[in-house]
Length: 197
Image (tube, rainbow, N blue to C red):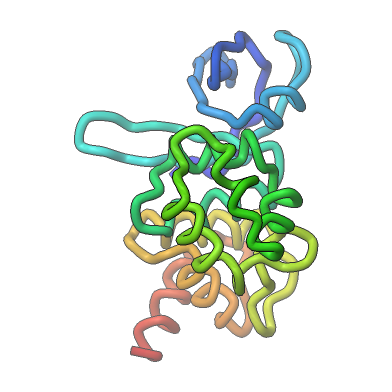
């Protein structure tokens, strides 16, 4: 699992950027706000990432901040919304604006996203109504503090193992004394998740 990339912005294309990380170029799909935040080619950049593995491809999606990544995860958990459509939503409605649209049940704002019809917009409102906090970030899990890099890597690994993002976050948050090693945190979170089943 690739949790983030740090390197140099090599090139920018429609909906994608190329990041040079130690001489290896990674093509990353990004939303319009993230692309705008990266600056000009040659700039040093850091992107949170989500790797999506399909039968015919391995696709990397990048995000300027954790809030955008978390909303991407919430959107892709909704039936019928894949990664490309989730990025399209975030290109038109960054987390703060999406939160307002969901809270106000503003279907017009959501259907402004190419590829989103009224029924899909209604599903987004229904699914996200209780999952987005007032700041546009996902509601914090009970007892969970801020998510550090170790926890983020462990959550990403659990998602790669088939957990939903909220399930993975709950499993990681349930570890009483989180270790600094992500692999050990994953092992303890799996034990904690298994004990609850």
